[in-house]
Amino acid sequence: AQKITQTQPGMFVQEKEAVTLDCTYDTSDPSYGLFWYKQPSSGEMIFLIYQGSYDQQNATEGRYSLNFQKARKSANLVISASQLGDSAMYFCAMRERRAGGTSYGKLTFGQGTILTVHP
Amino acid sequence: DGGITQSPKYLFRKEGQNVTLSCEQNLNHDAMYWYRQDPGQGLRLIYYSQIVNDFQKGDIAEGYSVSREKKESFPLTVTSAQKNPTAFYLCASSTSGGGANVLTFGAGSRLTVL
Image 1 (cartoon, rainbow over the protein chains, first blue to last red):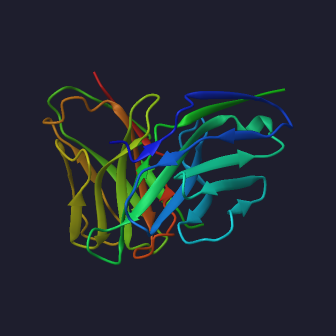
Image 2: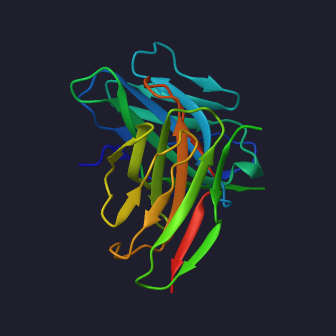
């Protein structure tokens, strides 16, 4: 079963508008972390935002915010006031606690969403 | 400036040849990772290492090998046993232990098998 699901292969948004990129996840561990990364055409992965499973408030970083709905197991990324430079692939990822331990394991990525910002 | 250096950026290989991708970090991170990305796809974990001289297989380790002799270095060898090695390879590092630790990525190496 997919641990991380991003159902939108591609999204389009007008410059200066807001856009929401969807992410749902699957885990039975009560302690986990959720991440969003941006990958421009150059290929490098850029960290955007993090949300811990026990965090009470939705994470925000500048124009990025994470709409965390724990009961629905969703962690959607909201980009406000889109800019042309936001055009890129966006990945949602999750890190779970290792089975039987307190340390944390690998980061599992979704398939990604390509965002195109139109002028 | 601290970061991760991957080399080479582009690599061409003939079938049957082993190739080694370099990954060096000066972030003093304990953990290092190798991911593979195919066109239009997400990242899949090949190998990771939480500490020097120790590493674990990821989801797609077959046909790959790694070593971790120094904290700063985590080279990946793509062997001739890897049936479809053409892909974009990303190395990453992080501090170890906590669930909030962010992975820092290198710029990637693009391998093409001719």
